[in-house]
Image (tube, rainbow, N blue to C red; front, side, top):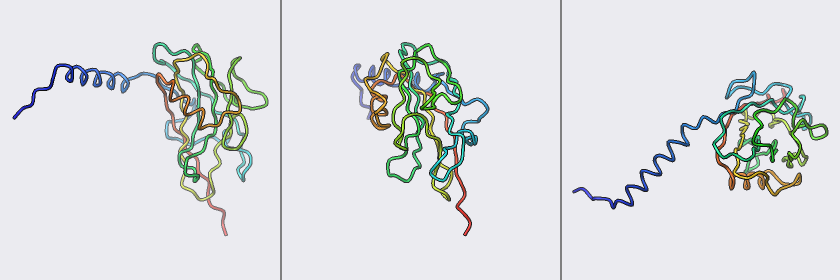
Length: 193
């Protein structure tokens, strides 16, 4: 026996299906020049400290085709594999202008940032402002570092440089029109002995 759905229910399902399809085929993309999605971080991006040795420079990023109506961007780098129970924030930068389509390598340097005027870098889980590169525990399987460019529906977030990654992430989810994701990996061997 077939049940006939009311016209309003059919219309609602059609709207949901078309919205999901539009989001699924969104052309909004981000890439790290010279790296493949799912590839490894370069030594230049690895944290300097906590037993890691690297350049601690944020990767260059290039993005394209954000959703219509984007009023600003934000960038986050998050490690969901960190053994903390809730991941690890490696970088949050927000209030990037809607006209921006790239950041150079090293843009996240806390002392000498290469960011547009008005951009704000939040606090990482290292407890510092600016970019903090990968530095997983020795012997862990390679961690995944999720680089996300967020297209936002506001010109500015009402946050400052003291905002934690969790607060920035919460606020970004409230204002996201779309997001582009690129993942890199990094692991380090367990010391011998």
